[in-house]
Amino acid sequence: MRKAGFEVTIDERSDLTAVRRRLGVPDELAACHTAEIDGYVVEGHVPAEAVQRLLRERPAATGLSVPGMPPGSPGMESPTPETYEVLLFGKSGKQPFMRFLETKAIG
Image (tube, rainbow, N blue to C red):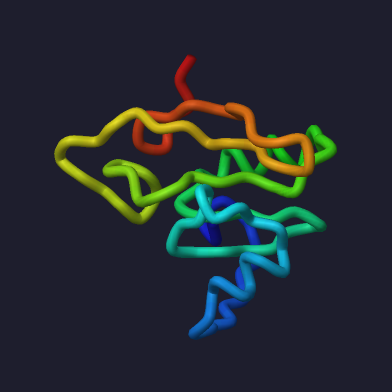
């Protein structure tokens, strides 16, 4: 995220479940990292391009999530990357936001 121009402050917590609950992240969208940016929540290995689009378009949503740890997502480099979806979520549920192969948006 720093390479994409985001200012990053790390605040390590031992009970991420409580943090996710406070921020409105559904259990099925939980991953290994939780971030807050400009009124949104970013959960998991979300590519910078998706966060930039979120901030540009400002949809009525809680935030973005990449559930789990898909091979090839940012920070999960792999010789066999998989296509994965970034999900937009909020009070009205979840929906696909973008698809990626590694950090390249596709489709």
